[in-house]
Length: 520
Image (cartoon, rainbow, N blue to C red):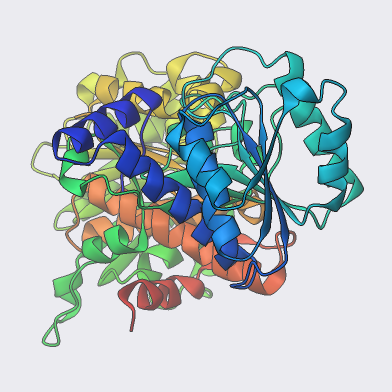
């Protein structure tokens, strides 16, 4: 499933028209699909419910009129409130009236008294005012109507608000919002999800996101480069598990992680690699940490490394590390290594002076990323496939920009980094972005505040490394790992809520998540 900008959506609709599906057909499909989603959200029945549809002046309003007609046909007492006057030459308006939809125009209600009355008695409201084409600030009656809508929702939280395609005033491409943009319960987006629905602050306004088909042929979307990671996509990426397999079938991952202050990071990363199915996981860590970690990681093998100081790796450990890397399919470096100077020297030598005959894909996380951020042109010496997994702060350090810039342009920033560094970039956070050097990208559909806690990123990097070990290409491993990690978080949230979740809660969920995605 593709994620589109406003211009890409316009182009997709044009292509559909060339194939015999003109705007009128798409509009009919859209209005019907929204009405059906409203009905589904209200336990399957519209009988005797009071529905108010706020109708804008453009195509979004046309979709709204079709929706109003189908709501009426489903048994709802339906009123269409027009922001701008229409007449019967507008076929959607005429058909709505003929179906028994009541209509009023805000131009005839300048004080919004009638609108206030309707809002006070409505069971549901459909915001069909503005769609993908509106970017300028809201003003006048339009702004006032949306403010009254927000007031009505605040006074009656049970009032269900639906947005048709996207909440009015939300920028389709950037996620920027107008001060009057309503926070809705359900956004029913048409054809394909829009990029702005996965970017903040707009994402806070979306509520539950429902994506409905309006008849645009899927083949007409194939060349658009950004995908939403769906269960179907993840299922197609999962490594095969043949019955006659042995541990060598599922690859080997080596993890260099941990320091005296961050022992848990090493545990979480190595355990996650085992939990997604890697055949063998080896943890390479400081000698002083071995006893603590071996008691928890009973299925993991170890390469103890000499330390620069107790519990801190240094450059003297690199020779032993490289000597043990031969035969591994993936090398994960970074979780919990610390930013002490010896650990930084270890990272630089381990990654940038790796012998050419050692060709594992590398996953670079956490402290390894922070070390690279202070190393000039590091990517020129990284002569192997790589996956970088920064959170927004680490991405800002790598790009020498602010966290605010990263967060305001998440997709663009991830793609820029991937192209510059010739590596797959996983920009973590709500709606994690996976970007490839070739310009492809995938967006994770999950935003879970429960995952905003220490160690969850270590679980993610370990899961990605475990998938690489099983033979997935870097972009596919990152895409699949991000989805499994996010879905595991959703499973934990369903049991515990979104506060108090800890990173280790994700570990036993990972194999269950894989089973769920497989549908077995």
